[in-house]
Length: 95
Image 1 (spheres, rainbow, N blue to C red):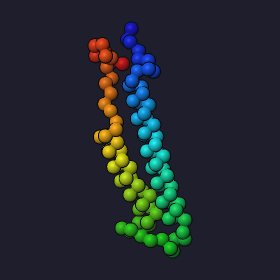
Image 2 (image 1 turned 90 degrees about the vertical axis):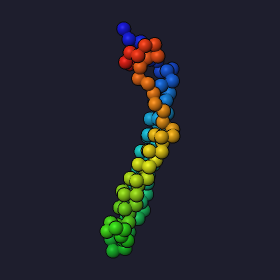
Image 3 (image 1 turned 120 degrees about the vertical axis):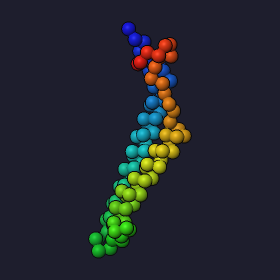
Image 4 (image 1 turned 135 degrees about the vertical axis):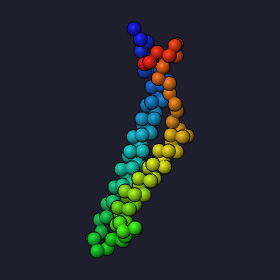
């Protein structure tokens, strides 16, 4: 029978921390999108300003927001996230 890891295993702590960071990024992405989409998009259509042919609310919420979140993910993966082995410490059996 395989040795099951317990919740006290440091890998679970790392996974939980990284999951919370992922949830935080998703919340940040939603707040960014919501803020620009409904903040700038709540005006009458006649008052919209356009960037690259797109309404500014769409450009900032969807285009710039996407790029900001992608950059944050890249930075976090390179600096904060850790590589965690899937094998047991004893001999390389898969968990």
